[in-house]
Image 1 (cartoon, rainbow, N blue to C red):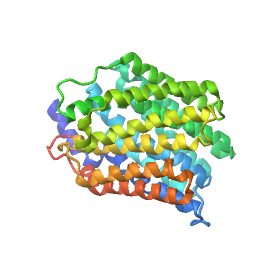
Image 2 (image 1 turned 180 degrees about the vertical axis):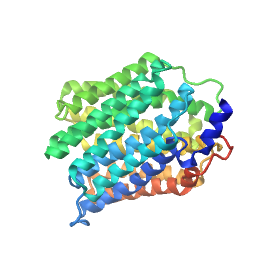
Image 3 (image 1 turned 60 degrees about the vertical axis):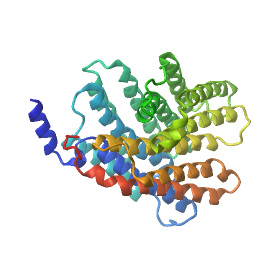
Image 4 (image 1 turned 120 degrees about the horizontal axis):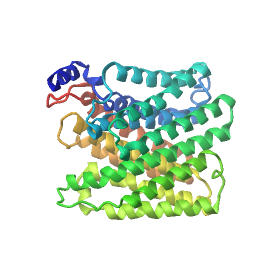
Length: 396
């Protein structure tokens, strides 16, 4: 039976053998193009061209529910195979899911009828959540149930965002996307808590890793989910001292993680320091949110972009660089260009979070160029790995 399954798996076109392949590649293409397109639109380069819902709605929606959702789907639909021992989504079902994602991206970008863009887009996350539930439920893998919950909450946030776009309700769009971003932060908190200490121990050949604090990790996860829900329903879109206290507690928790997980040896390994810096940006985002709620920071944008660019984008770039190597049968030695990609990315994050405050358009352009080049460098080195078969001849 195992031989038959292996033959069946090897018969699938390599690009559709596991979810990380199409979604890492296509998600990175979207990331590479989306930020420069947005900055060009801000500068008035596309006066005669409007995506469905307009450029601002497109920017808010696509970086979260297009790019981030694709990478999350690719990672989870691949990792769940290792977690459960059951075959991951592959072949024709994966092709259909990929085609749905691509169709939604094109529908938004070319200005397709609103009903079509909404329909195509709304289906994606519920299907990913259903596939995850279908994988973890039969084996009663309780530790991964929260991922199904968070995918469902992301789907709800997307639905609220889409309703805001359809009705032209800018405030509803804003609170739903900011809430959705913090749902992604909850996923990052959970997955990061599993992989960053583990990857650090393995990558530095340490005999012992960081001792797990399950209750601490659950507290961070639940706290992040709660603030996400509160933001999405709109109550925390104005400064509230109580919410500031919650974010301050989350900030302390993430700063404790930054210190606990730190090992001076990471600076020799780009695949590690990139992960640790992304995790540090998550702590910065929590600090900035707390300061904004305490009325000590003028603009929530600093916190949102520390999270979306530094933490979310940074963790994605670091994770796809590592996961692609591991799941294509290669040694965990990234191309040298990825070191520069990680450096450029963090320079761009500093530009978006810090420089924009006193030099708006120069800061945006620096951030956009660094972001675009970082993902372009990933694609240049990794795209052949994603569409070719594993180098060790194994399925996947």
